[in-house]
Length: 116
Length: 112
Image 1: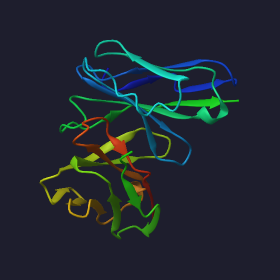
Image 2: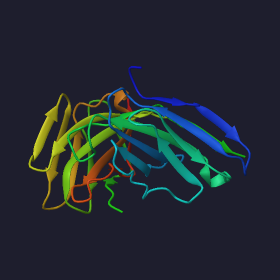
Image 3: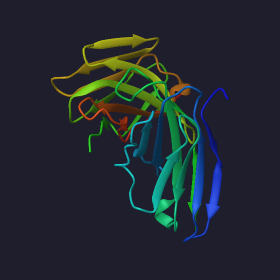
Image 4: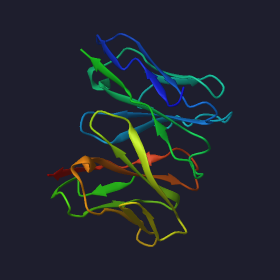
């Protein structure tokens, strides 16, 4: 596709259930990022994939959160045993090169998660 | 963790006025980027300034960078109602070389 695609756009789940969020980056982009944005707040870094390097998982808030990326394509963010505090918009972004380079990030529209 | 901090948190102005937002960060950087977010949408890249640059222009946007003070400013001239959005600065720690870290943003409201 032309841009970063995220699905689902909205997800309502019950506390304790697992959820999986998907991100399709722009074709050819080696870097992929996940961020969390709570209502009215800034972006909270979660995880960063760059090519074949080990991902930077330093932003994952707990072991209930995990993410995978298949090569340089699709990524999934999984939240196990969801809690109400997990309610937020989860934003995915991709860039052509590493974060330290000159590449700008292209964002998807986000997946809005509501945990009841 | 390294993070840009925008100031002010919120700014309200009239159409035609200029809007200035500031960003401070903590560690040495490779570049600093500014992004815009319309309500409920993804972020859009506005401008990137490298650590060896002091000022950069793009249309009605002017960005400055002072690495000695670890700060940057974004100026929007002749603002329009359509400029109403949240604006974020983002930096990468050039030693760690990891992800782009965003500040908490400035919410700009432009009244017509």
